[in-house]
Amino acid sequence: MPVEGVAVDVKPVTGINNGKITLSVVITCIVAASCGLIYGYDIGISGGVTTMVPFLSKFFPSVLKKASETKPNIYCVFDSQLLTSFTSSLYIAGLATSLVASRLTKILGRRNIMLLGGSTFLVGSALNGGAVNVAMLILGRIMLGFGVGFTNQSAPIYLSEVAPPKWRGAFSTGFQFFIGIGVLAASCINFAAAKHEHGWRFSLGLAVVPAAIMTLGAVFISDSPSSLVERNKLEQAKKALINIRGKDTDIEQELALLIKNSEIAKAVNEEPFVTIFQRQYRPQLVIGMIAIPFFHQMSGINAVAFYAPVLFQSVGLGNDSALIAAIILGMVNILSILVSTYAVDRCGRRFLLMEAGIQMIITEVAVAIVLALTTGTDGTKRISKGYAILVLVLMCFYAAAFAWSWGPLNWLIPIEIFPMKIRPTGQSIGIAVNFAATFLVSQTFLSMLCHFKYGTFLFYGGWIFIMTIFVVLFLPETKGIPLESMHTVWEKHWYWRRFVLG
Image 1 (tube, rainbow, N blue to C red):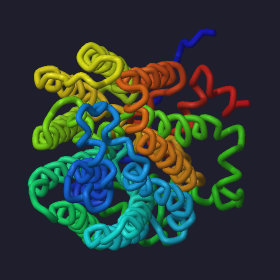
Image 2 (cartoon, rainbow, N blue to C red):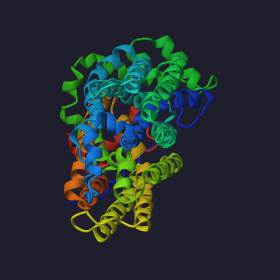
Image 3 (cartoon, rainbow, N blue to C red):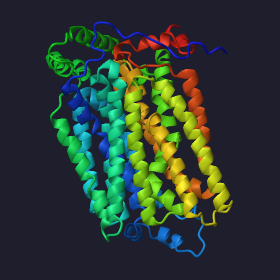
Image 4 (tube, rainbow, N blue to C red):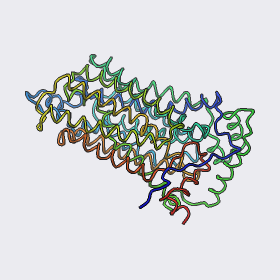
């Protein structure tokens, strides 16, 4: 089958502010992107806390007993379903919340859902910091999941709707950048708290800080123009557009296009969860709601992010060294996200995903080879510190590739391809799929590491190969295209045009 024209080049719509950046839009997008702080902090904190002896002694003593064995299998020390439930319970709650959030977002607006998410996360943080048993610990995780479910659904939509079309990619990477900041901050706090008897309470309880920052910030921004138009608040929408596009910018055409798309959506008056499955929305269903959120997790990145200290401790680094390795990984992640911020609107989405796919496959295979040669097939050999550092270096190359590709683009591409009438619902389904895959990965990674050993990294390398082939064949280029004109990329794509033109 020919695949000519896989990359689609569509000219931006004239008359709409495609590229002007105002101070107001920068501040607004920074505040919205800061919602990523709470997600990042949680990802970073959970793995470090689960290596702290006082925490394990209080809640998961069986893990400590296994670690104290004379000759433990290094891959299986942390294989505990109760321990992984501590990490993964958040994602089941997030999955359920993200599906509810689509309706609430449509009724209450993007900003108010961000406020709701931040407030819920605050409650969960307090419960975790003061936990006295496993039940209270997991209840706190569930509350955190509610908060993350709301913010992960609303903040990326808000960013894509507010950002100038020409620089939408750069602004939308801000969400992933703040996730990276949260992960790095959590890793540093874990390192500082690890030696203290109640350090785990300090680590878990401090989640109130990023939650308070993003919640307070959200109070001072207006809702997105698209959301305001959708809720018939046309004067507020006009003011919001003038505010983010600049007082000397003619916003009438953009406002008229938003109103037109909103009226079309309302005239159809269909249930969004039914509309999404219509033939004309097959590209958005397959790419934005299933493939990208699922592939994002099957890259294995969150398994590494959740359990980085556990992983590095398993392959031969001491507890302190493992936490330092997690900090290094976090720093590489943040610097690499900045690469994406610069390149995404210049090189395009497809180039970043394809280059990163090749780099990630190579590093996953290399890690598997190093572990196979140094730990043996039974995992009882102790890996030398030199080889453990080599694993860290390879994981840094892997994390860098992910951070300038699948990391930020997971939040950008699905949002920008959804038309207005299915955007909140499409995002909700996509986030639900992402949370389901995250739960699957977080619940199974330590068990896979125990049973598959170094083969775990080959497993994820295989998925990355599939992801990269999918991008080459089925993902059109979307850089610089206004959200309201995105339908044109499907009409010119070698495969998807049969659905949208049929």
